[in-house]
Image (cartoon, rainbow, N blue to C red):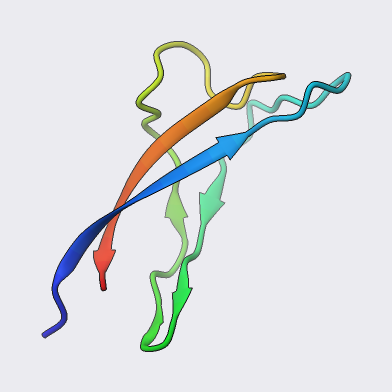
Length: 65
């Protein structure tokens, strides 16, 4: 079995009008041995609303190496 690792995903939202979103956002990480499948970006390490204009959010995604 492959080891489980924690990936840090940083998302930068642009400083443009209407750049933010309240939508559910997902990520799929691809590698040499396959992919993670869709993973929701639910819990930002930053407090407050996620994916707001001119903001950076960090997420931790656990998946196999």
